[in-house]
Image (cartoon, rainbow, N blue to C red; front, side, top):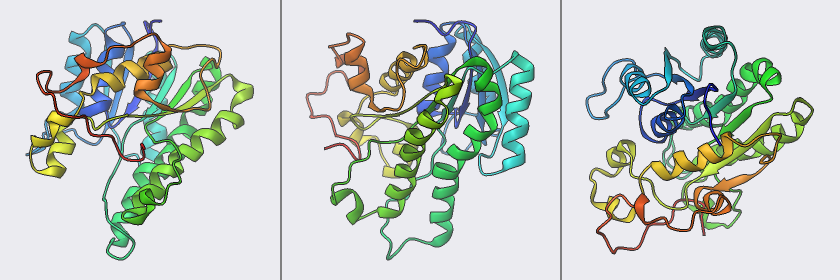
Length: 274
């Protein structure tokens, strides 16, 4: 199970889970396209496409940093074409970029819903469509960071606008797995069992206090690696949980993924997971 020589196009890879997936693949010697908006440092969030590119190369991979707004069709198509030309093809698209606002219908601003829809659901459709000509050649992978379709009412009661946009990603996963089956392309979703400690979550919550209940992004990176290194559609059409796919690979000890290894606090289950 290696991604050596494979080319991964990862949206939102300038920090967090996307960055971790990039670095995990880089340790195999993969080619990583860091496709994100962050070309300049953010005052409160670390990481840019260029800093991650340096980390990828230090880890043993090859990097191409591209500033990409996944809402812009022409920019997305040009970026994928440039990536394919630079590395000779594309083997995997990781739709990691995301937007979140946990607000109900009553109070959500339409421009915020539009942003979530465009970055979550619409970008998956756009990026997958734009990547399709290259993935047809490689028989590669599309991996969407989206949840299982849990229809329990509690996941709609308080923040259905966000839920709709994330579930839209997962429904596209199921549809594209069938639609692209004749091309040998595997399409899956991946979601964490527990809260993941990222700078974006810290920014949203205002502190790291809750991280004692969280795991590091490494668990998502290892789970993504297991999916992306599979072949011949052995894994496709599934809405996967990080812990479950790793258990299928024989992993039984998850203690080393805790953000605070000395904490005895109960891990916080992530959204959409019962």
